[in-house]
Length: 174
Image (spheres, helix red, strand yellow):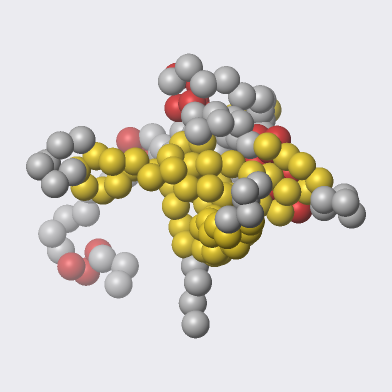
């Protein structure tokens, strides 16, 4: 049997971090996910608001680095939970229990859209929105260009080091 879900959308509010009686961190948040298609008459796309919960280090990570409006990718499992409301009625709710959460945008993209959030452990890099190598800015540290194990390309040789070969095949080295 398989129960795996991956969603990508924007946080509708800042994640809420709480702790259980034994001190385990749990973060609750809601992700707004646009549907891939419009309404029946071809109108505007509808949006689903999906409740998510992240436990332990994942919950602390989400609470620390994600804020309202930030694009997030959540990978986990769908869980149906039964509960009783204050009137004694039995209720059921579906939520995504997050195993992993990733940045769905880059810090640069979020800064340009007017969102504000602090730095993050990964320097704002994401798995969907940042091109590694264009901006080597890792958490405020401007990293030098990679050296690839100490190898650097040789400088272009002066034009005088080249000689034209005659059409005689006897001069070819192979």
